[in-house]
Image 1 (cartoon, rainbow, N blue to C red):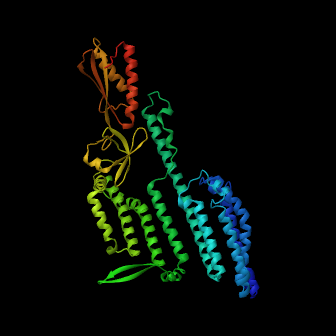
Image 2 (image 1 turned 90 degrees about the horizontal axis):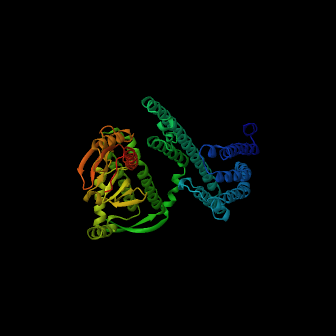
Image 3 (image 1 turned 90 degrees about the vertical axis):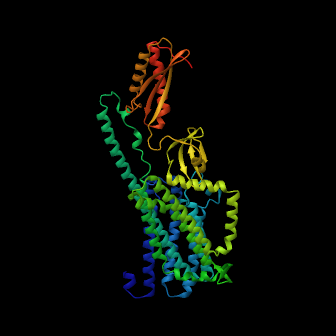
Length: 531
């Protein structure tokens, strides 16, 4: 401030601007070094890849001094009123800055052998992939070099500042999201731990006389809570996206009118019939970009809006789970269809141009696609009527499995061998199926027992009931029953009928009952007869 306003000279003003830029660069340099430090936030809290974070830390230490120096020189030359210095030395420095950042980005693009080895064993979502962002950064530097070289130096600097502000805002929003996500996860784990402790105390109070150890009374899995609640995550994502879009809008608001030149670039022309007259409508670069933006927003909305609707509206209404799931699923497909229709309309594909395609689809639907259409309608019925739900255990045509996915055309089951079975939706509507868990998971388990003739039937019935009542997985209500059903040709046929609370316990309970029956009958001298 003293240099800038103490003496009103051009050189002092340039020095003050340079020092201002140097202070900002030093702050950003220090912040990024702390962020990517081997013991910093990314590794310690966010569990990022140590290999990638370490490389970024080393690259920042190597490139940051050069970038800072070049930025100071550019700020100094730009603050001077000498056009020769700005357009000559300043432009050359700016191009050199872009080249340095291009070299930095190139090292992360997995083009060289060392770059490919960097990503070996790593997997990312597109928005978190360093290769994707570094490729964009590299392309940006090439574009800035071209703009500065052909005479648009000041426009390049201005856009560079906007891009820098946008990147800073994106990083700020990303850090805000991950820190908030981490905080919600910690809160969720604390709540889960407290509830588990309360449950443990209740179990200890109820079973203090059973003689079981504490390890038998509490499942340790309650501590390992990996995800936060869906509602909290949805609200957080909506808030961060709103914050990000609002900030980017304020950053780029002054540049949007300058994009009107895109309207003058014609990509192709399409014929449009208006009042009986066919005219040629140009599809410009601006129209193409708007169409792509509409399609992208439709895809994003289809992915996020159904969950948001369920969070903010549907859970407050008196709807059964089937209706709510059906509404959100149909909303997703509706958004996609509307987005595609608007995109096609923007690109000049009017009804008159695509009606032949609709006619062809209609003919195909009548001949070769009737099964697809039947599965589509059956999928809608499944969504609204809900005879099956995610997580239900069903049996269909001697095939049993757990419902894992319900789509508009087919449903996926996972059987006991962990195989995924894709079943067309039409089969669920037209054939008989057994849903073991539609309204209640309690099922009856029948254990047939054949004993030798001459055995004491009353003793056998008492033993079977004692075995059933001593097993903790057997429900007390409905009560177990031991029935003497018939006299066989060489044996007396009994059945032990018990009820189990979970479908997943049927096989385990059968195994335990078989072992106990065999042991107790051997001790009592009762002979079992093979069928």
